[in-house]
Image (cartoon, rainbow, N blue to C red):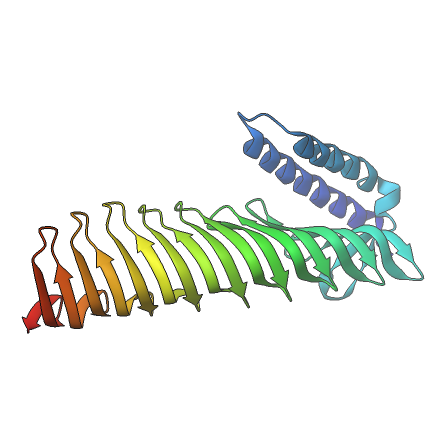
Length: 266
């Protein structure tokens, strides 16, 4: 059991955490039409605050190993039902518990700017969930064993967007990447990089279809220029290199070897 002094300290900590959560909610909804889902979340937070910061409930808080503190529903000496786990670093895990482990839809609040909300199995992110870090990106999609795994969508702070497959936390397989500079890549990824067959479109109207490797144009492909000219052949690190043919917009054609993006010989 925890002393009355410790209860007061926990009470202050919880109140401060809820203030942060309400501040985040207010900032996120400022100037917007609040939908029913947001209202439900607001009502839920209010109910949790009223229920849990009561002194009689905090008096039943349990101090666990490594500085963890839990208060909520218990059964047979284990966390079972709804409860909140407070970590020494201030993070709060809120949700359902079965036999001492988080299970189901939960929310892990790291800080005012960072949280995970979604399915948790055996204390790990599993299934669909949303990870928000206002300083970097927002991810909505599938998780496995605490890693992005399966289909997901990631929205970056700089405006770039990725929609596609993830394997063990990395972009892997088929996907679409919309860059903040206006370009669009659609195709295969490997270890977070463009790798395999794909297409890329630029804002000036040019586009390329063919092979990629190491996040660049490498291998055979077809590059179409804004004026309609077209090069078909080999590329190395984004430049024409190897055998290829250039057909200009006026019909003139040159075919042969290229080196460093320049025509080398017939």
